[in-house]
Structure formats: structure tokens, C-alpha cells
Image (spheres, rainbow, N blue to C red):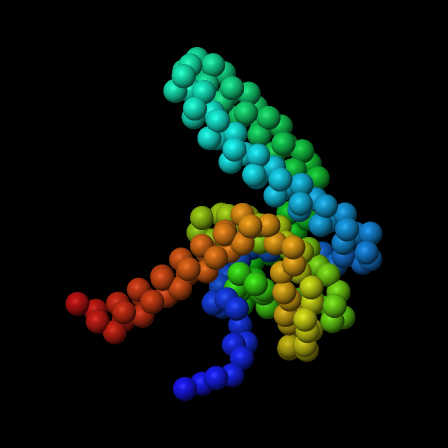
Length: 187
């Protein structure tokens, strides 16, 4: 029986995602990005609480519930407009082959990164279009063909984003297992 230390904490898959990345050049940029991600996590928590309360209010007073739901939709639309106005890097999304887990990622880049540097990643998963924005710390950056491959661990990952990652990895694994079974037993 093997008794060594487990190297990975999460399942890893090979996947194709739309992504962009940006180097966080100093501690100020890192702190600013972590603050932004923390704010997004707090907004998600509030959103979940609000959904529950809207259901309760709607049962007690359908008209008030509908009015509050409309106000919530209006606020969400305004927030989305602000996000789109401030998200110039989303225009830089490229489809890339990656190795992905709920704890980290391996992806190609054109320039060398120093171990310990931080990057902010925007990842869009297919086919459902789920999006996460994550800060990652570079573990290694190795020459690969004309470019480099970065191995990075996710840091300060919001629980909602980790859930999106875990769900996506599980769905990809399930799909791969189903396809493998179908190839082995085509009946």
C-alpha cells in the first residue's frame, strides 16, 4: 500500500477555455485585485441572501415581491454595465488549451514569468459560459516551443468561484468517462 504524500489536492483535467491574464506588477496591484475579488464575493453572498428574502416576501405579498424583484434586476443590470465598462481585458480573451483543477492551472504564455509573481485570470468555461476571475501565484514558468507554460496556484479563491471550478471539472470528467465507455461499448 502506497504511503507517500498526496501531491495534488484536486482532480486535474485537460480543457479548452476562453481566458485572459494580466501580470500584477507589485503589491499595490495585488492588494487592489484581492480587494476587488473580496467585494465580488461579498456581493455574491448578499445576492444569495436577497434571493431567499425575496421568496419570503413574495409569498407574503406577491405585488411587493414583484416590485422588489424588479428593483433587484435593475441594480444587477446597472452593475453589469459598470463591469463591462471596466473590463477591457475581457476583450482580450483567447481560447487556450489548459490543465485545470480547483486549486490551480497550467496555461501557455508568450513571455517569461518569475516564480512567485501574481497574475489575474479571467476564465470562461464551455459549454455553459460560466466565468471566474481569479488571482494566481506562479509556481513555475518553463520554456515550451516558442513560448512558456505557467503553472500557477489559485489564491484567495472565493467559495462561489471554487464551486464553479469544481462543478466544471466534475462535468468534464463525467463527459470524458461517458465518451470512453461509449467508445469501448458502442452498442
